[in-house]
Image 1 (cartoon, one colour):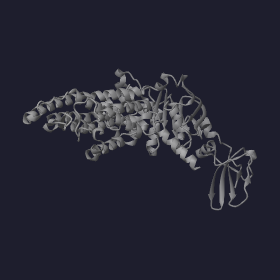
Image 2 (cartoon, helix red, strand yellow):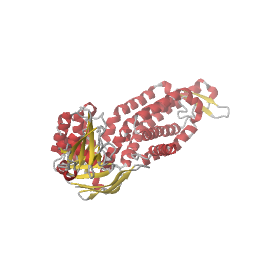
Image 3 (tube, chains in turn green, brown):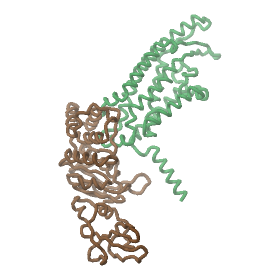
Image 4 (spheres, helix red, strand yellow):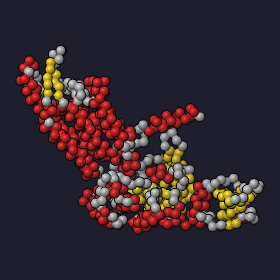
Length: 254
Length: 292
């Protein structure tokens, strides 16, 4: 049986910081302030900073918490040590993943719902100031809640997958942080609607449940999680193809 | 009693690391010896079910494929540093739950194990702040939890000073009295302090398995030293094995194993050191059958 206490002790500081962050975001006027516009094709368009806080900055917390919670289990010596006990991959990875997902998604979804109700209020205020946009449709709060839930699960899946490859937590966190830094720069302009953090630096379609970036995250996350659940604790993933390649090349050289 | 039968293991696309390994270990402290790369760690991982191999293993008749097997065995890896940021008590609790100790008895088991290795006073200390010797004690405490029948340790004294090593082995002797303990090492001094039994691995094969006493006496009366001048024709040694040679100025000293009857007159009987026995079971320097 996995001792949940160990997970709690490993992440409680970061998790508390995450909750404080969500609380602070809810009080930030900047996070919900929205401007609206009608696109040339007649579609409504809302611009705000909500996803910068709810996806971009949240990603940093989620990745850190995931790495802190699972980092030890993915280190090769610890992974081997765990295999010497009668404990299954389901218990080491799957149940803990579900627990982590729920403990992150519940407060985050609540924060998203509250923030987007403020966004709707901000839209009304904007329309009062600029009546030429009136009437402007309110946002369906379920849509950003869905976007954020899918994105949050993807951040967890991506961290677990990178830890599966690197067999340790530091490098995946560094890689993801480097990616986040690039996102604030050129990447969002290159990938546009397909960008992982579309909506954080570029406009997002708040009227569609599955905009392009959310769609590819939704498709990719079961693949990443599947690979993690199948290959956790096995030496065959990536190591083996690499070894085969080295052996093949050395034989050719001989 | 640990019984290993016809165990063969190979990593992907490689030559077998373990070749048809078979031996039986009775209760007591046994050392698994072998050079680096001889397959010691692989064998320990097979015994602890970390790796799945061909062949069969059992502890007191319970097969390694049964669920009960893992509860009979405790594994102490070479560097025990799981969750270094946690307190020792939390690490011990974690291991107790992994070993499926009843939740109501976890605290009792943890206290009991801590008392036996004398770490009761530092249970609230963070693991990473412990000294090397303390960390080893914590490792032993984890191995004690759940009252295992067999304890497997992978080079537990690597990198610690002689004083701590002696203290470590004293604790092992006290804590695991009457249990089956298998310790891998290539530190020869360790064997002399503690070994009841010895298993020697060379190139993935068992070259010796038996009591330490027999192991220690296995070259008695059969080890000789032969001196030869550099450049002289070799001394014919049919039926003998040269274990090692040492050049001292113009003289080369050979340590040779063979029956006294077939030794040349110049051969002087000597007392075997543990290194000689090690070399003998590892295959020696060569078996050309000549010195010089």
